[in-house]
Image 1 (cartoon, rainbow, N blue to C red):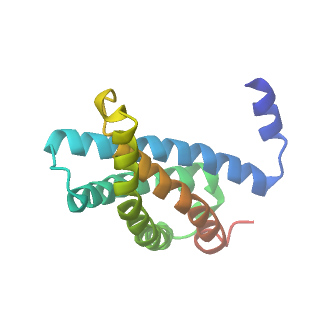
Image 2 (image 1 turned 90 degrees about the vertical axis):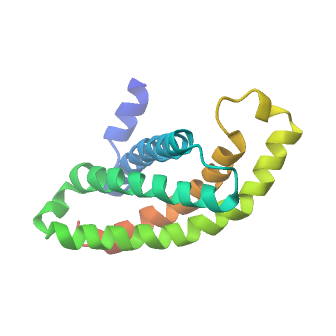
Length: 160
């Protein structure tokens, strides 16, 4: 771990931001999945695609809030000289656009991942709905690069 820290510490600003973005993204991933499974558990939503899509949209919103705070205060602290409302608005616009990318991916992969998990017999041993989580993982991975580059070159374009 210390070797990775030393490597990350010596990077130039952009790669260092990307490494930080990956850490924030990993934390956002945990927030997203945690909220997704908690909402699903608490509200015990039936297993229809519509309910799962709504649940992933709510968990996405939770992760967006977390990610904005980490981006604003840790990855791009120089951006705090700009009006925060402007940054929030831009970040939310990018996030909503990514939700429009993410939701169809989730909806399209959900039947495939659910069937694959059932075919492998994993639906009986997993304490969470593994098919739902795999579909969510597919969607999250696709929008990760979109989020980084659009936020870097639009939301935080004023950061050197």
